[in-house]
Each structure stands twice: as structure tokens, then as C-alpha cells.
Image (cartoon, rainbow, N blue to C red; front, side, top):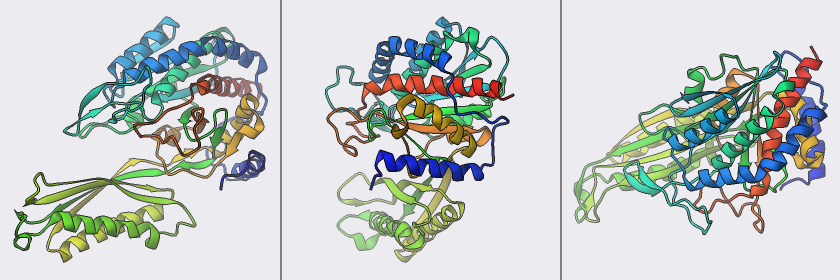
Length: 450
């Protein structure tokens, strides 16, 4: 049951006080929870003026989506915009990533703001005037391409924040690094990409980043509501692949072969018992999901092998190890009992998104000043995954969700990663301001507390 905003606020305060006690990666300077009203007022006026342009950018990017490591036109659009603003630009970071550097009038901390750029292999439904009609080949299949997770909005909001922040450059006591990241949804087979590659290529260096902020559109939350959690916010994400090898035979004489489809189905059902029977889910949430099961190409041929792929989501190392062990054990033993062989591989995709306790507790008041105390809500950890985690492993990070429930829709009715995904564009102006306020408040408070 979702708590009321009032109850959520008191829970939030209690959680934040407790989180400070558990702080382990604090920034060097304590940040007073007071907004820099002069600069934020200036950027707010600009954000209000350019919001229609931010919406236009979002719609253009939505209509022309690109998959991970293929965001060529999106990157060109971003780079051209930043250059026009007079921001230093570096391209082809992490393959197609774009990094902008805004240096203030005087030295100070370096604040990174991050947005992801890639779309998903999903065919869009609906009747939007800017609906995507792009198609491509993905994993050997023809598919539509769609911004079904809000990354188009993330890019547009960060482009807007860059334009607003340039206007206060002469009063800026530090540096802002704009990170436009490709491939958050994962790289194509055989490639590297995403935040992990950008970090590897030095995106947090030259100049060295002190803190990083990021946001994610949430179509299931009311517009105007920001949700957050200190500590573990999004789950660690592992990918598993199980290949069941049997013996091919005619479909009319199944006894002559070893059926990998039936065996694979039994393995799939066996995997469903891991969370329900082997994991203490009252301590932490966990998920084991099979997302694809492929085998055969004709109705009267029992194929030689079946392949399933899936995801594991966890918040605890011991639990993660238990699940890995059980996936391997269940798959190999069930296969052996049927006379088949199961080959299991598990690869770590994303670590857990960890919001620095101290940074979160100090910056939440900035968001409360922007949207109101009752609209900044502490929530349970989510089993989604986000490769923002790689930045937050290296420097203190704060990641939050920005509500964007479409008008006339109920929470839970519009889902991310689906052909019917939508968002309320009224949230975009708030997102621009949130990024600006966080950057300005951190920089100003750093200096006022030196």
C-alpha cells in the first residue's frame, strides 16, 4: 500500500536522519540545506521560457529513436546544441556519447549531470503525431524502435538545463559536466557500452567530478512528485543464458530423441521456485525472470537445442550468490534427469544503484523547495536496474525519479518498456529545474561552507 504524502514525509525525515549515521562516502564539505534563491530564480525564468523548446526536442528525438551504440543523429543534435551555447564539447565518448563542459567564472567543484540517449527494440502503438515508425534488425529479427522508457525526455531536459545554466555562467563558482550517455539499456551482443564504458574512458576525470546527479522519468507516478531513496535504490542486474542440448528427432517419434523444449520448460518452471522457496524475501527483494525462450523452426521437428535468457535482480551479495548457485543447480540437474545437457552462463550487467547517504540527505531539501515537501516522497527500493550505478561507484551520486503520469491514466496503467508507453510532458520543465537547482545549490553551498 502506498503511504499518503504526509506520512511519506515523516518517513522520509526519519529515514534521512538514520541514513546520515550510516554515511560512508561523504563529500568533503557539509552542504547547508538552503537554496541559492538568486541563481535558481534566474534559471527558473529561463526554464519556463524554453520549456516549449524542450518539448519540441523530446518529440523530435522520440520520432527518430536509435538503439544503443547507434545514437548517431541524437548525438549530433546534442553536440550542435551545446556548441551553439558556447559549451566545450567532446564527442564519441563511450562510442556515441557526448560530454559538455561549462566552466564558471571562478574555480570550484565539478558537478556532473547525466542523461541517457538510447531507445528500445519495441514497435510503438498509439496515435501520437510524433510516433516512431523506425524499424531495424535486432538479434536477427525485424523490430520497431521506440523510446519506451523516457530517455528522449531525459536528453531534452538535460539540453534544457545546459541552456539555462549557461545564462548564469558569469556567476558560477565551479564547473558543470553534462554527460549524454549511450546504451543504458545494454550494448549489442559482442560490444561494450553504456556508463561502464564511459567511466572506463575517463568521463569522470579531466576535470575530476565531485558529485553526479541523475533523474528518470516515472510514468507510474503523479506529475509533480519526485521519489527517492538513500542507499540502495535500484537493484543489481545480472543476465543469465541457459542452453539446453538434447537430441533431434522427428516430431512423430519423440521417444527417439531428447526433447530440449520440454526439458527447457521444466527448467523454466523450476527457476520460479528460487525466489519463493530459497530466498528470504522479507529481508530484500529479488527477481528471477526468463524474458525469452527460443527453440525450433518447424512443427514436426524436435530440435537439437533450446535457449532461454533472463534477468536476476538483487540488493544483497549473499542473496545474489544463492540465486546464481540455484539457477545453475536447477538447470543442470533437471537437464540431466531428462538425458539432456544444460549449459549456464551468468554475467553481471549493472551493479546496484547506491545513493550516497550524506549527499542525498543534503540535496533532498533542494527538491523539496522546488516541488514542495509533500511531493518529495521516500519510496522502497525498486527492482529495476540503471547503469547510473557505475558513476555512483566512483563518486557520490544521487539518482531520483520524476513523476510523469499521463493525464487520465491511473498509476500502473502505463508501463515502461511497452508499446503503449507514454509520459506527461508537463513534467519536463520541472526536470530541467531540478537538474539546475541541484547543480547550483551544491556548488554554492560548497563555497559558502569552505
